[in-house]
Image 1 (spheres, rainbow, N blue to C red):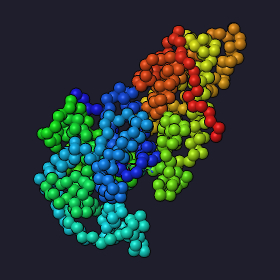
Image 2 (image 1 turned 120 degrees about the horizontal axis):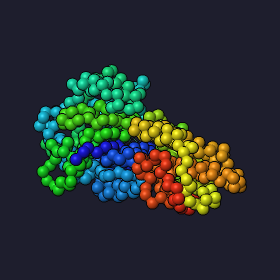
Image 3 (image 1 turned 60 degrees about the vertical axis):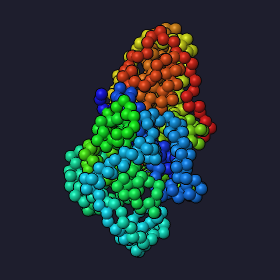
Image 4 (image 1 turned 90 degrees about the horizontal axis):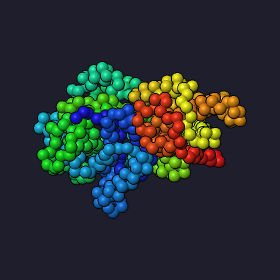
Amino acid sequence: MSKRFYITTAIDYLNGQPHLGHAYEKIVTDVIARARRSFGQEVFFLTGLDEHGQKVQQAAQAEGQTPQAYCDALAADWKSFAQKLELTNDDFVRTTESRHKEFVQAILAKLQAAGEFYTKTYEGFYSPREESFLTDKDRLPNGTFDPAYGEVIKLQETNYWFKLGAQQNWLIDYIEANPAFIQPDYRRNEVLGFLKHNTLEDLCISRPVTRLNWGIPLPFDAGYVTYVWFDALVNYISIPAAHGDPACSAFQSASGQRPAAIELWPADIHVIGKDILKFHAVYWPIMLKAMGLPLPKQILVHGWWQKDGAKISKSTGNIVDPLAVIAEWGLDAFRFYVLRELDIGPDGNWTDASFKARYQAELANGLGNLINRSLSMLKRYRNGVVPARSDELAPEATKIIADTRALLEQSQLQAALLAIWALVTRANQYVDQTAPFKLAKDPAQAQRLDEVLYNLTETCRVLAVLLWPFLPGTATKIYAQLGLSDAPDKFSTAAWGGMQPGHPIGEPTPLFPRKDV
Ligand code: MSP
């Protein structure tokens, strides 16, 4: 048994429908998972939903439903959304599942026994809308609180707290000694800056059931449920435990069938958005250390999408509906745009105009045109039969294949797409330079035409393999049009020369129909 490459997304709050930001994170993670599988690694890709909390409880109440019924209905939409994005996730966690809840309780019981929690009465300001306690640090210069907090009230409440105070120094040392732990670098520096200039306050882990009952009951005090992070973050290990991962076995309850065990923990990559960095890079490592578990190898932090330069927001109607875009333009056009437009790290801006421009220039006129004219010429001039091997474009293709692999290993998805598009551009230029339509008119140029057609056909095949993690539907179509019956899902087959002379290709059909834009 060997450890799988284990990659996760954040689990989304179950209020409302998925939007562009959720879709982006899941697609990024899917591309990394597919790339690793294509390299021959065994992968486990986990995504899912964070279903507890006051907002869900209130939303359910407002609709006259039980929280569970409310969650079940919405979770079905989110699961089907994951399928529409063609995510290759191996499991889908819902924090309301008993496999998760029992595991959280086992951990809480163990940490309580180890003296990691204590009770404290807090008196101060509280934002019901944001479900959080506020301190003077949260005040604006004029003494009020940010309107985003809604009405701020005074509250006195006794809760359980997790001790963080003594943990700061080893975490700073760890982050400094492991540059890959938080990526990109500027996010890592942000965490280091935070840790060096602030004293960590202990983390509140509970809410009294009188105020919030849609949560996981504390196993040692029926008056409380656990609150937010001790529930949500633990999904990253509760699901490995449910799959029998020996790394998490110390917490497993004796009950329940154990499936064939797979080794997952520690995670190789947690993909998250910048807003939840502190929870993943500060609280989660400290929680794991208290549990005696190793830390994840990497926290990969992406930026936030805006639309037309403004915050995405349901209330103002400034949204991108991924499903509407997919219905009109196709899934791969959507996947391509978000991955090509935005590197993992900075914030991005969606505009319909730039979406259409990339579709037209890079997909329709770039990739689509290359595949279509290459295969159409092979059909027309050689009856669709692959000619003798020729290696004219091999050196350039081979370099781009190696570059793409190296970039994918670093999760540099945008740079990998740029490398792949260099080959698209080169091959389109090769058509213009060699002018096969002229060669075809001159019988003395028959061998030259064979060479050109081989180079083009083979480049199309190589491109399909390189594109597979990003645009799986398109890659599959290219293989089908090439008359190849296997899938383009093994990176090793990208090596130049895979196309066999004498092989009959299939029917060329446009991959990205031009639209009047
Ligand atoms: N439930 C918590 C995460 C718990 S992880 C143990 C949560 N949920 S969320 O639904 O608010 O956000 C889920 C993910 O979507 C986060 O990584 C967040 O950064 C990301 N995004 C939400 N809106 C986004 C954009 N506008 N743009 C890009 N990503 C965004 O936080």
